[in-house]
Length: 251
Image (cartoon, rainbow, N blue to C red; front, side):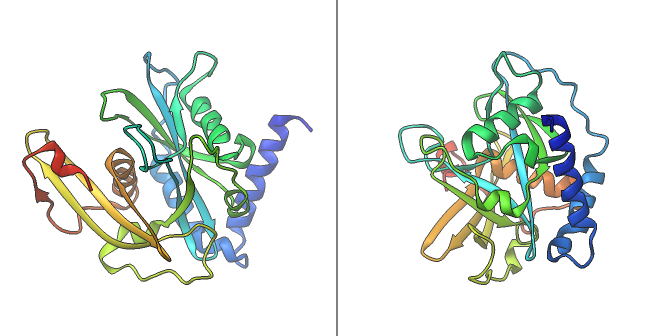
């Protein structure tokens, strides 16, 4: 079987699973289709300026609902040390398109190949804290593939799953049961901060799993907020806290 035929079969299986009302993952069916409709007309032109990057926002349907897959970066001297983010990276010369780069980086970073991913659409092109353009795509990853993901140790310390509906309503999110999906974190809090001199609002979601915790903030949190806004018309749960210095944006 060719790579293309295998990819088509994977996509058909994902759609068949979500379309079966008797399947336990069908709880996420409507959400996946809603996201697909919201991104339907946001096509990417396939071009990218020098130095641009691309990321994939993976969504994982489970019997407990739809989850967002995140990576925790290893601790070190990098600006992004310990941060949560999406799989992705710089668009290389051999990449046919930004989407190809996002899929390549996903395979390299967490071992999930393009044949296991159904792309729902292009979310947006945004600028990261360094002013570089980042193309973000949204895709569905089966729970089995997410559970078997193999993080590249030099790039990924941990793979986390955050429930999408709890990210939408973080002030009323219940704790997840201990028997939830592999790597699932509960959403335990949310705040936002505004830095008027920069004209920006930064989001902070607090996540916890047992004794481990994490904060989703910064650029990736902004992409999550944009996804929620585009799909659900999401707005800030409460007004942001105004700060005066860039340093005050650190979690």
